[in-house]
Image (cartoon, rainbow, N blue to C red; front, top):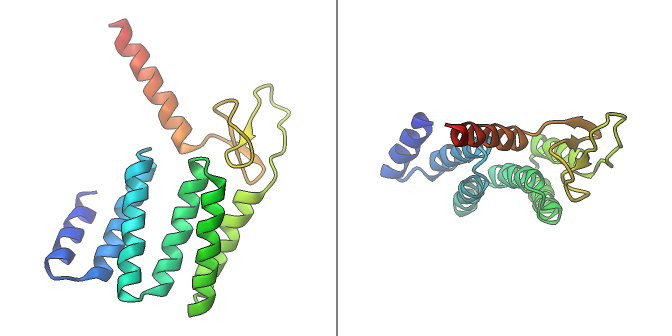
Length: 164
């Protein structure tokens, strides 16, 4: 992460908004992986804003796909679809075929109906239903989300600290 922060600061010092947009985007990914979703959203939004300012439409579309994934992961299906709709429109306008592929993959993951597992623990899609347990279904296949793993680990740490 220090490299992205350094990259951002250096780009800012010379007014290189495109490099700033890449640096802050990757800082947003780092925050997302750490479970700090509000900070991740702010940084991904800043990246999209910078890209809009300089007219880097393929980058805008890619940033909107990232915001769509983040919204989906945090349970805001409506926002996720909104970001993906805007990403598709922007990618079509500028001919960003690669981003259109990312958009399609994101849509299939987000809109796939949840299949009930035979496992004794119930699970739900993070987008289509209200969570009932820590088990999340992405693309129809049950799996632990990174956010859930972080919450479980933090809860275990708190319990361990309370015993001391």
